Length: 256
Image (tube, rainbow, N blue to C red; front, top):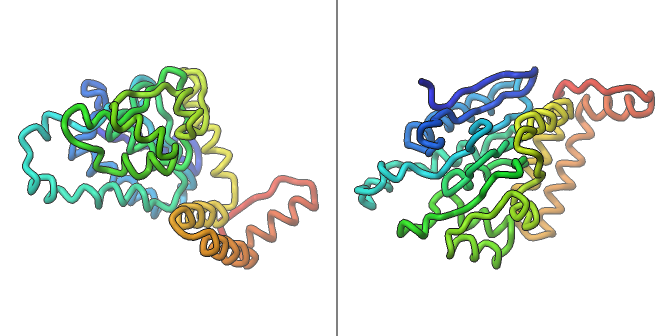
């Protein structure tokens, strides 16, 4: 059985779905490798404009595979080079929407935080429980979490290992939107369709500038924004979008 499935439910949209229900979609080494391969391929695919990442309607991902780690040595972990797999997801040029039902814990929470938008079901739970097994998050769980929710909320989650509800996650800025559990997948696809209909060059520039600017000074980040703003005036999509606005018609964007 394929542990990571790629589906194409609509034009320009790809769904990457974790498929280890018997293990609550635990992120084994094989799963991480397949995720990296799929995101690398989808990032290059000109027919894909938005990616939905999900574990299905029951559980997103309940962390790493502890059985595979219990006897691991520091050198074993070092030689896995997992940071390269995670970086493939982080550097994907296409916008990613995480559709989260059920648990997003440990590596699952870290995986969701690699997305640009997180749609969570009302029954979803987010957490970084690594401290309870004697380690800390190793795929951005301390750094991305603090950037998303702030120092004090992050410390509470990291030092207690306690999960938070979807609504708590939304209130602290970890989740974009909370919907009924049976609406998560559909809502993620709705958002993906909206984004896929936008001009691809502008979408790509927004993602690149926002992520790069987060760790830059405000002055430098504003400079990146200005350059991207100026660059897009050379695109055909800019001409199409503005003319369509004046003509009071729907625009058709091609990514040129």
